[in-house]
Length: 170
Image 1: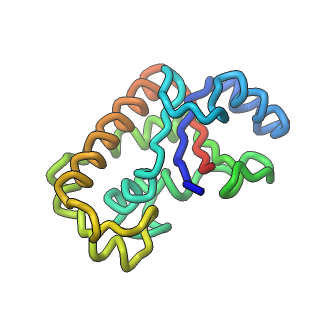
Image 2: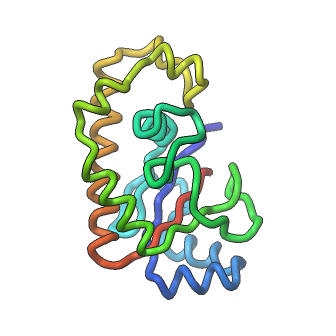
């Protein structure tokens, strides 16, 4: 079974509603077809499939920790209820936090991420999906950089629109 990282932009009103009544989260995610096996992105939904953990590592140089706001992929935010989507509850980030994350990502360039890529260290830290040393480093890195650019654009658009963010692993 795979662990997929998912990002769903929502309005501030939608965020307030699901934080007040977490049982509404399933309806919100079902409406956007986020919980389907379809892995295509939409304007409000971005699946990073298996690259989520490696991107967290490239941004923080840690497996699960790191400093805000760049640790948002694997940490931070406010849990939305207690229901697990496979690997813990969804985590919510306010529009202000999305702006902060977007600004921080805007200051990260591809060269910095290239320098942080270390397949051996990623395997030592058990960065999902593991086996980084067994793959073509150049191909793996290009895939990660492409996903980083997509994520950065996705969050920049959300920040510009004053949207909040839900992050969940399933």
